[in-house]
Image 1 (tube, rainbow, N blue to C red):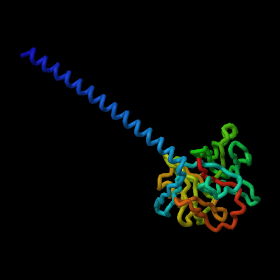
Image 2: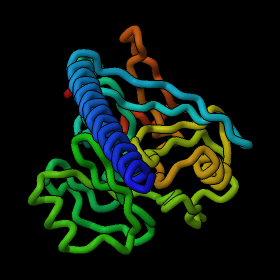
Image 3: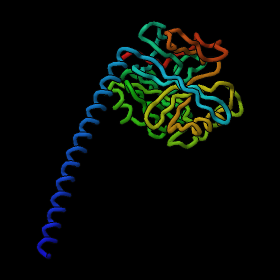
Image 4: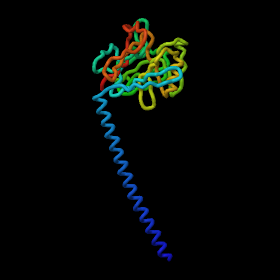
Length: 261
């Protein structure tokens, strides 16, 4: 009886191991198949990005306002010094850095490795490094000669602005007081970046709180008020103008542009 029990046990173990091995093979094949599907999907997305550049428009409701998010697809982000044309290559255009009353760019500004304005404005609390398909929003105290040299060498772009949100936290901003305007920002979420704009005039603090409420990890202000005119192409390739009271449009000095890859 003891021998039979031992044999039965060994048989059960062998059968179990055989089944486990088969299960492992099935899981591995399933995993390989899933990886292949993911890779195929990624290749298809890359194909679509080249053929069909567009925006996903998403309206996010907060306590203070609705923020329209313009999420790019199949376009690169560039900083321009010449007013972009509304042609088939450009899909969005909004002012980036502030412009001074003398029609100069406010703060350190680098375009594709070329230093346009080397004067750092210590009153501007943040800045943005612009790569072709991503951004990095930083605090003012991260600006130094080493960073500047790195950006120039890599032929990247950079502009200073008012920092609104950093690491999902509100950044103190006394620049605008209680004045109400339509607000616009360049926003970084966990897995994408976009342009966001309030649907109505609000204070800067209300805008900051709204950005945190909808999940922004970092956000930097964009020039608004009478300098606010911009545009984007809708799904029918029609140009949609955005902004308010655009009396200073001719005095704009620099632009964020989403350009076809």
